Image 1: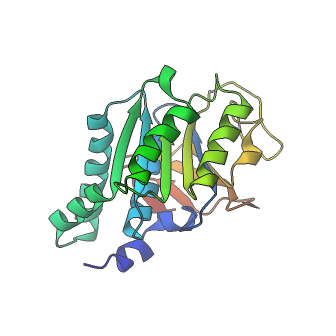
Image 2: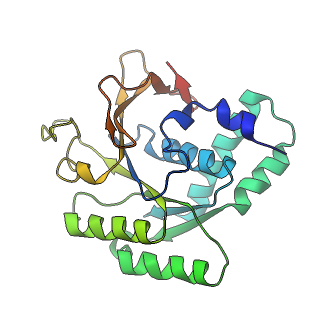
Amino acid sequence: MGYEQLVSQNPVQSLSMGDKKNQLGLVMARAGLGKTALLVQIALDSILRGNKVIHVSIGESIDKTRLWYDDILKLIIEEQKLENATELMEMVARNRMIMTFKESAFSRPRLEERLNDLVLQNIFQPCCLVVDGFDFENSDRPMLEDIKDLSESMSLQAWFSAISHRGDDRFSPTGVPAPCHEVDDLFDTVILLKPESDATIQLDVIRNSGELVETGNGLSLDPTTMLVKKS
């Protein structure tokens, strides 16, 4: 079963950095606005393109993370009226691996050790790394540079999520809020999730594959399904 049509119709493709390697992406929002949902859809886009994805969940269980994938996949299958739903679910499960870390246990050496265990034994060769729950508040720039270096050395595209806080008025010159305002230059793509008055959640794309964007790209999260839609 080919998934080209599913990829081409997916609005996420315009911000997922495609198959580019050695790039870092960042998704920022206040708590509960859909960061994980967006990361999962970016990961699914990569899988449908034929890649393998490592999803690192910091401070959450494997079951909870897997449920995000199952729920979003079911919504996509229902919305697109896809046949061979079971085949699609199985294909995604084969090409996605979930790793969990306790918040205090996540570091480049530990991540690298676990990735090498998989890659060197030819168990799993990822092209995309998703890191959900990285603690930007209590991490310094060298730690993030270290992980960027790891992703480059392993030819990975890597995506991070970060929590911003209402009332914190610290921003980078390009509009990236704290706690990422001093490290935003390390990211090739930066997406802010912003709630609107009509209950939609706008995707404000500040930088896309290294290019600064002034007006975003007309995408939003449906607050009911958390699927990315064209506004």
